[in-house]
Length: 323
Image (cartoon, rainbow, N blue to C red; front, side, top):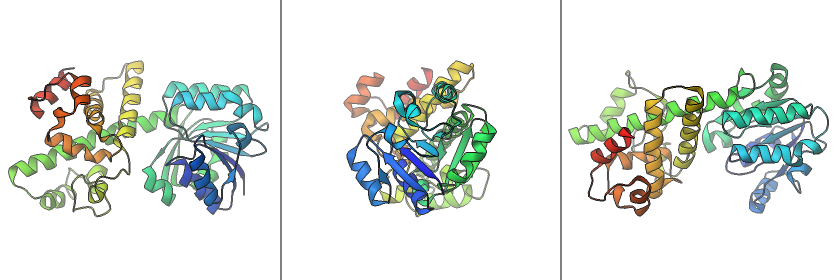
């Protein structure tokens, strides 16, 4: 069993660190939020006084942080200096590809192997240890990390060299955001045509319209009992996080010269959903925006997008797509 430092004990990092403990690893964790550290201690995680302290005398350090700037600040702010020579550094944050590659360079300068290893599966997957890890970095670093990651997930994939894990994550989540909007549009159209939710689900889930957004996170209550739609759209994967990932995808597309018109439209629509005040709800709740129920009356929406409260959904969506 390994000695592991874990930095970032939020909604995802907390259960991930707890699952490492369950598998018999010795984990020392740190988070800027004291309450998160207390919750981690209740799961058997030893408390560290700082990020640097979490990295001392361990074989592996895992970071799970909000953004690229945070990863670079932690890695370059004393953590790497505190770690022993040869410590494996894994970043499971979802960040931009450029920051991921910059983090790898910091680790290389410190002569430490590193991986960018973002995850898919949400909080539920983190709790159940069924996450998918998408890994970028040298093959020897991946081989060393795989047993650690398998303690927190069900599938661990080596996607390529530095930054490839982040590239896979943002491409995957761009597909997810687009598909969820498509599923929501289909259910709203079905409602207008008098077709029941269950009838559409039974047809589409076994036909060419089948996709993960439909069969796992169906955006209407009923057909999928464990979907957030049956729990008041309490976030399994928050709309704010989907917007973050879609923005990362658009930044990457602009840098790479890739054309992603549906990704751009999805980013606009999730931006509108967040401005409406739904950032903390599940991303499948965007079906309410697609229905157009009084979305435009929210002052934040009117200010950010320049829309008028008298406009209907079709008018506003058309405006967004033209931009």
